[in-house]
Length: 303
Ligand SMILES: N[C@@H](CCC[C@H](N)C(=O)O)C(=O)O
Image 1 (cartoon, rainbow, N blue to C red):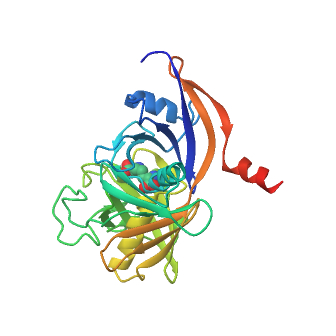
Image 2 (cartoon, helix red, strand yellow):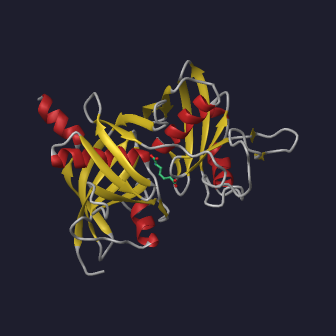
């Protein structure tokens, strides 16, 4: 790549954080190694996902390309869809935008509350070969999978759901009661998930209130995962454990999920944040901050 610096935006949805490149005019493709170097929290910028905003071949507002911190490209990211939705709405002065992703066309719209965006994440998929799972299960509400001793498993029979990416949800009585940092890598790469999976522990602690901790495929523990919130809300309602509207409480904060009865689409609502502006020098793979984000804009407005 020619020597150049390139601006980026650092954003997050409830602490699930992203570096965002605008590649609509000037295309950008980085190798998985470079993505992983930039994503490293010790030596790089540090992020959960890298998002490249490109021109849509469908003629909608933009195409959003998603890379996990480990450099792998994936199809869906709920929190990033809300963040990119916000950017595109602000840029165009619209209150509804359509974003093309590898998992399909998604609509983002302004929700009540500052910096709050709703995304229509489309329909969940429950068929074993769509999630995908490596073997046939007629019912994916509780698949045969366990870890720990055979007669006394630590975690077992998760629900499996695709929200454009694969999710497994273990119903537990305390999300802090399990070493997800230890079991997450084993479950993420379990042979039952041929493409890996995002792993959630979920505890319904009150009516339609669910606490969730997520081990994200290609990343590790994250403060929030939008598609996991959708998958948990859907799995809970599908099992009759909750109604169709739930609040998913993640370490980074709450996300509202509605699994709409009329068309089976999943609507996800939550906060977005611009953290700062920066630029990367691709010759040295170093970076620096160049501008402020929401926190200082809001502090200035208040003074
Ligand atoms: N943080 C995301 C999910 C990102 C992709 C995921 N790690 C995968 O590999 O499928 C979200 O908000 O949904």
